[in-house]
Length: 225
View (tube, rainbow, N blue to C red):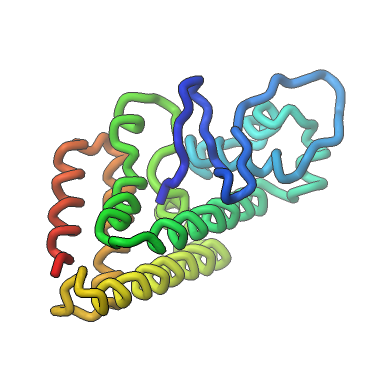
């Protein structure tokens, strides 16, 4: 689940025009405490967590990336866990808007293919070091679930929202004769959730881009009426 585009300068266009866009970039630290914008700080922290993962990102990493003092960071967000979970919520908020907007398009199958190819960002993830990898919700599942009950609640709700949105789109496409009616749209949506999260996870190990795209095409073709 990764609706964010890499720019030529190496930064990421995280929140697009439809979702309060702003390009995320690291900022140079200064030696004096300063006030900072909470939303900007959260977006920058999201990029860092997404790139490195929860466990590998230290408080000092966040202090350096955000160019703030520890006291300001703790005062605004609390501890690292709280900061991370806020970042995951923001990630899903943006992704859900992207998912809904994309699947409103007709025909549906090209839009689904667009959604399925996002988690891997195959060429970028394989060739670049340190860029965001996979789906942050999926990464959170791997790192924090089921030990952390709040993280489990966030990812469970996110997966339910994905299947609900995709189910509605598939139901419309079935009614229009674009998608096969041989399976319930709920079951088709669940299959796509497993596919999108599987691609996201495997992409972190250096997924073969051609093989991944072939698998996506096979899944989309299997939905065709």
